[in-house]
Length: 328
Image (tube, rainbow, N blue to C red; front, side, top):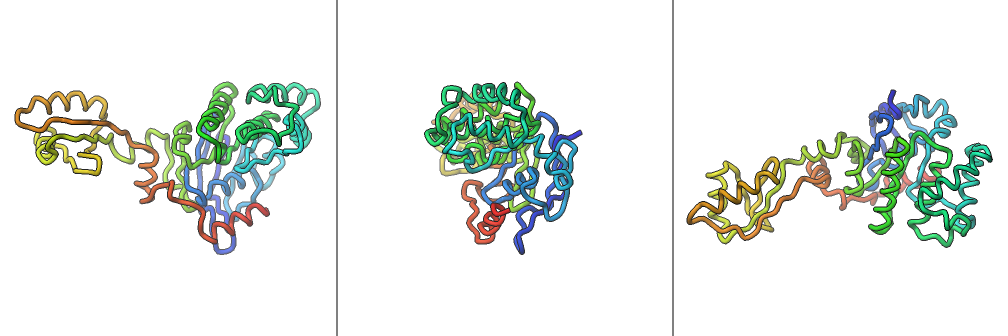
């Protein structure tokens, strides 16, 4: 049985459709990523699955439980870390966790045992009794992870978990997520627009304008973008292009950074290529050569025709949809 099953989910706000009939299944123990620009429908989908929003149509099951028919039962088995910080600055870290435990009906004896465990997991034991208002942004995010784990959820939803954090803190947060997955087998569903974060996922669904446009492992998705890219420069690129075509049957093109062409298994290709090229009398000398493997940026560009970093939730319709979503 799948941990998460979504079938033709649709969410409309008046004339604007934020989620357009998406379907996917997530197996137990997966780290499943939603990759897409702001306004693509990532947060809306997560809020539907977490029972914070009613879908306009379609169905979803979390641990076999229907999200619209038994929302309270769904909430008992999931943890959710919002995109925006939601811990209470006027309470201590421990008090934030106690309030959460009470809301989820965690018995006092279990809570007393779990709170030190989750605080230790995110390295906040020494800050447990200090006001959260004195925490850094990264510490607050770590406290939210601890809070989301307090009631031992089978599924943890992370909506842009490292948004706005510095690279070092982002790396630490991700280490907590990976350790959590490896040590406890929690199924993790996360949304992100950071390509490097998506690389940590077992599978990725690329979502754009409310539709899933591709879904597979990171490696298989990157293979869609083409083969490895070789960039080289010589003392006579015009002659080099002819040599590469004649000896290797490869079409090289002059780019901004030098000659470029694609090959399979570039790391294995380069040594024999350089050896063969350098032995050809009267032909150009290689000045530099480098290898770049396709990235998820390349995949998004190939599928959508634009770079993900240039996208944003700028339209009035998207802003109106977000406002309505927050109002519930």
